[in-house]
Structures are given as structure tokens and as C-alpha cells.
Amino acid sequence: MRARVAYAGAVHEAKPAAVEGRVRLADGRDLAEEDVVWLPPLEPQTILALGLNYADHARELAFKSQDEPLVFLKGPGTLVGHRGMTRRPVGVEFMHYECELAVVIGRTAKKVSRADAMRHVAGYCIANDYAVRDYLENWYRPNLRAKNRDNATALGPWLVEPAEVADARSLALRTFVNGEQTQSGNTRDLIFDIPYLIEYLSSFMTLGPGDVILTGTPEGVRNVMPGDEVVCEIDGLGRLKNSIVSDAPFGR
Amino acid sequence: MPALRIPFEFPPFALSGRVYGALLNHRTAVEAIAGAASKPPYNGLPKAPVLFIKPRNTLALSGEPIEVPAGEDELEVAAMLGLVIGRTACRVAESRAHEHIAGYLIVNDVSVPHPNYYRPSVRYKARDGFCPLGPKVAAPDAVGNPDELAIHTYVDGALIQTTSTSQLIRPAARLLADVTEFMTLSPGDILALGAAAPAPRARAAQTVVIEIEGIGRIENPLVPGRA
Image (cartoon, rainbow over all chains, first blue to last red):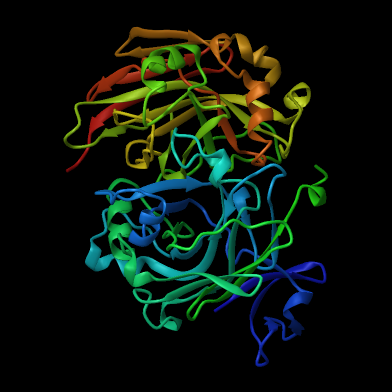
């Protein structure tokens, strides 16, 4: 597992240090995790995201099950690293987190079969794919104003290789808001699982190294407010922390 | 996968490979859907700009073939003016939008015809080679007023559609301002301004040419896709 962090004027690869809460840079420096700036662990190319990919969450939002994955695309400006901040615009009624397993593609995938799909995975991260529901419109829903806002998709802290993950088909996901657990799920409940998604997407588009698939979120989304600390956790992938702020830090 | 091979005329910038396009930003497109827009699933026209993304696998150059997927008779081709961002564009004021535009090119938003705009339609719009663009990045001086450009689409040499950027709901500067209110655009990103309706259609073995005055033309043959 590895991270990208900025420290003392340079960007570094970092790994977990022997002591929890500390990181070790590739050059040997051992630092407290709050003393480095955490960047998204990679600079993704195409970012694909799934909506309504857990049956419980689809029920929560009163959607019927689908016969085809609900896929949408995101741009790179929406990404923010571990320990980053996400703005909740003043006047918004409902903004929520979404803890998701992010799958990073490692090799070109075109018309890949389900059986062959996992060979194309380079690793996994945690994603927190915020939504501002006030801005949802029924055109190309979820539209970018609701789902592709600057700094509104946290990614990290680590990029974890498949060999380091017990079984991506069965990973528990949890979200905590100010320390209280609000969301829980397991990737075994994905409606469209990772091999299916790779087969489906690569049937019509070539996936390439650095493309990322955010696989969707289970039930338990809650409104979050400025000052809230949101932690998304996935077994074996670490804990992705994010703070909600209001307009003021952005000079709005 | 098509690489980005388009020369960018203003070093040190290069195209980023990120292409965003606007839905329903042309008067004819809004008129075409006006009857359906008030009913479910839409329940009204959009208030803010609605964008789609053409990912990097869709990008192609003039001359490259567009595959018509097996089982489809024709494709829609949607001719648009594309703004090439030259400076980071975040919360841009409409009056200063021109400072962020490095130039212009032609964008052809190719789609498999699909019945509605409720879902993002990635399977219909993000196929390999479905976003030919070019033929170059034309400098603002060479293009003149971006809000008065004629756009012509030809299929096999016959003029199928003539439209103009003067019919955009949000002209270039307004769209850039409204989009960068919620998402930053970076140097080399492309913002395509939106197409007229109905979108021209073409079939395999036909050739589509799009021309925008001051920029040039892109020409792409349609070929049958492999099953």
C-alpha cells in the first residue's frame, strides 16, 4: 500500500510506518500523518462512478432495481486527498457522503470477459463521493453540479495492490460522522460486482491504466454540516478522513 | 487507443484530454424537447448547465474512422464549438471569460441514438472514437466573435445542417462562468458549447464533415463495427 504525500516542498511516495498514525517516505523520513499533505494516491485518467449499485441504498432512495449499471463520469478537479476539506455551500439542504470501493485499472482493457477481468486491476482505494442533492436535476442524472463539484470526491489514503487485499468481493465498508457510525455495508452486496463492471464497461469503451471505477455506496447516507468530520473505512484499505467546511474558507 | 496528437498552437499548453459538453444549450435543442421536458422523468427544463463528459478513449482526430456498433443502423453526430481553456478557470466572471480561452476547435459529439436524457448514457456516448475533434486549436484572433459562428454538417458531401453559435442559450462566456461556479477547468480542457437539434444521422460507409468558419473542418468516415 502506498500514498502520495507532499512534504517540505516535494511530492513523495509514502508507506505506513511501523507506528500507527505515522508514515514513512520513500527516502526514509518517518512523519506524523498530520504533518504531511495527502494527495489522491494517483492522478486518475477516466473516472467512472456507479449509482444505485447496492440494493439497500437503491431502496433507501426509492429506486427500482436496474437491468443495466447506472454509470456516470467525473473529472479530475473533483478529487481531494485524505484529510482534505469539502465545501458545503451555504443554503444547501441535503449534502451527503458516499463511502465507496474505488477500483484502479492497471492495464488496457477492451472487450474483457468477466473471467479475465480481475487481471486488469492494479489496486483499490477508498472513495468518498459526496453529493449535493439540492442540485440534482433530471438530465444526465446525477448531473455534474450535484456530483462533480471541486474537492467533493475524496480518494485515498492509500493505493492498495490486489495481493495486499484479502478478497475485494467481500470487504466491509463503514462511515463515521464525528465518531458515530452512520453507514455500513459490504462489497459482497454489490448489484453489479467488479468483474461484471469491467466486462460491461470494456464492452463499449477501452479502459486504460489509471482509470478508476467508483463502485457505488450502500445505505446509510446522512446529511453533513460544516464542522463535521467524516471518516470512510474499508477493511484492509485504511481510513479516509474528510472535513466539511462552509463557504468562508473559500472566500465566498 | 487514440493518443492525443493534436498540435496545440500556444506552448507551453497541451490538451488535457478532458472534454466537457453542454446538453440543451441550443435553442433548437430546447424547442425539440419542450413537450417532453415538463413531464416525468424530467419534470422541467434544467436550471443550471447540464454537462456530459467525453472520456479520453473517445477522442479522435479528423480522418479517423468512427465505428457504428454492430446492431445499430446509424449514429447521431452533434457539431459543436469547443473552447480550449488556456488558464485555470475557477469562478470566472462572464466579463473576463475571454482571458481563460486559449482558442477554439470543432467537437463532434457522436452518440448511438438513445431515447432520453434522464441518465448519463455513457454506453451511448463514451464509445471509443466517439469524439472526433480538431483540426487544430484556432487562435481567438483568427476566429473572431465566438457567438456568431456558422456551423455546417455534411454527410457524403450533402449539407445536412446549418446552425450558428448565435442560437446558444448560454453563449461561450456565460457558460464558462456558470460551469466554473462549481467545477474548475484546467489548461487544455475543452468545453463544448452544445449542439443544435435534431442531430444529423449517418450510417456506415458514409462520411461526416463538420465545418466551423474561422476554424476549419473535420472529416470522419463511419465504418461498420466488429461484433
